[in-house]
Length: 426
Image (cartoon, rainbow, N blue to C red; front, side, top):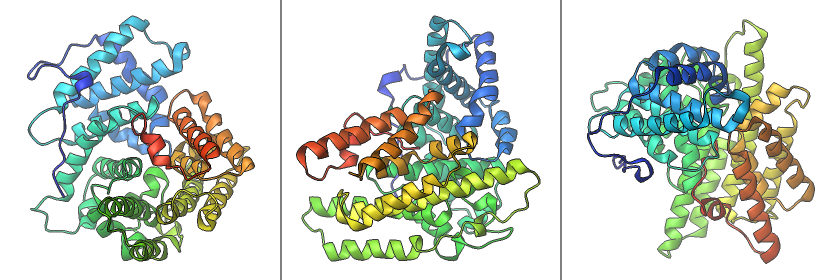
């Protein structure tokens, strides 16, 4: 795997060696308080609330501190006057300062720290909050490089499973969150995930299902980060890799349809024909809030599992809504969404916000009027939040519909999505 490079952010570039700009104490304190009160609870909506215990101590690290201020400023700006902290002109200066401070702090030649990685993830969230477009991959690469240093350390004398199990809570959280963003980014960019080899070792074979205080414990599961079981997570990574392989074979005139189908069938057989989240969440709940969080994660996992089949068969058969396997996958995805209790706003909101990618791909690959209306309504429900990428995703889906309805041909949802810069579908 080639090294990850961090190109200069031309949009926010400043002279090399410049000192980070100063920040007014009032502005920074107000934004940190805003983060604690309003942002953290929606940033990682399916994660355990205990993440607060390590996220805030990491804020003592300068880039993380600036990133929290940046994220809070973006959130406040998106919410408008409802959460006003300071005058618009003062906030604009502060937002620019945080961007510049991060550019200085992160654009360095040495290795990155855990605090740098957390800062990168906060910045990725800031772009998710404001529509999902922008230079988010730059900041994701900060976290990727730190994860690469951890997982690919030649001095390790233990398995990757051992590395995770012997790491602290904050390290495990940052690693798994980076993994999640890495895989979803690979979908948007039609690239093989950076850590595919590591995913195969961590989540392939028996490691996806070993239960108890081991590889299947909540501390090792993607369920406790983003509500996606390990096998489905690995399937998404493998499908992205297959999609890139297919495109590469087409460009070189060497695509073998039988080989493509064979590879796809192996993914479906090994990773998508069984579904058992119990082995990843064996734990005793001490209160109803924990039980409710577990239920929301399981509902989310069902949606991801169904949509993974849509994704797989769109790679195998093309973007044809009438393809039987795609049509079945869309129906299963909608059925999973309908199992989310409509009379429980918190459950509905948290699940739907977590499954933007499944809604996007299912929406793009249906011509059924009632299915279109249902999926669009789910995205529209989230617009009241004023943050996130649901509006951008709606635009992508509608653009796919218009082009397919007008031309009566297959329309690549990826090409439409990338037309104005790739969206991170988280």
